[in-house]
Picture: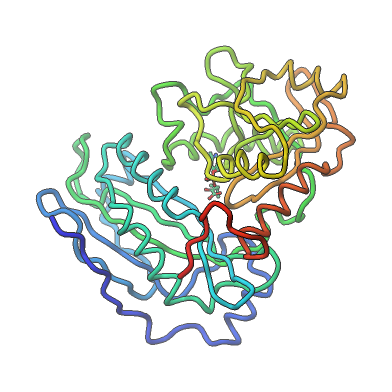
Length: 360
Ligand code: PLP
Ligand code: COI
């Protein structure tokens, strides 16, 4: 089967410069979308076909669409950044394309070729490049996703899928800016088990997390920290972010057990931290380790990382049984140094030593 080329049929009625500029002045996260989107179909026996860039518009969904019932759907998140010379580059799109394939395999969906994933993102960013903010750490967030488009109520892998990329200008994910977040250790609810879908970026993981997120909010916390599903004590990750624990000049992130998402920011930071002279490791940390090492002062900082959230310090921790301030509750030096290094790389203010930037 051949890989289709993307036919360009952009909007003839894009938002005016003034309207777009007003949005870019304060984009928030995931609230506004650009003028166009890319859609590609997959049909059993035919493969990928009808790849096109078209005006952003609502979809018409049959009430018996299989995704609405059985949630055969996956997504990705990556960002395009304005570079100092005015050009635009995305960060590690191949890594997102590969994770999209891994998610597809787990969810019994067809694998989109890496080149086509990247071509779809490139086509949208090139068409809507005026939407890439040019201030500070703001970016254009790309949301590639795929879902079963077949109609029917039989429980089996669908034989038709739709892949779409949409784009949304992004300011800070947390409206408070770089302020430490408070986290809730979820001991009642679990996110994922080994053999489940935790390592796939699939909608059901997020749906299942919402009740715990509401519980966190009812305890005055911003985010949920997920623990392993068996012993309820090994730290896994957060709702949309991975975690790092800073022990002086050694940073440790929970190892990939199969039930947490292999974050691309997490992976990048293992390398960036080593470049900066830190020891960076994957390891296993329990809630008791966290509390004890914070109290004895060896655990100096904790931060969360992800595409949407970049790097966000953790300032306080709560559970049914405990409640503590992480360090002095303020953003730590190592956290902020890594944050700066990552953003400098992404916005073209530091050398791209590992060939991670993908210029358009
Ligand atoms: N964990 C979860 C559950 C996520 O949704 C995300 C966001 O994509 C991450 C971790 C961080 O992954 P990445 O750094 O690839 O954005
Ligand atoms: C991302 O960082 O890209 C995410 O997917 C996190 C969240 C918005 C789901």
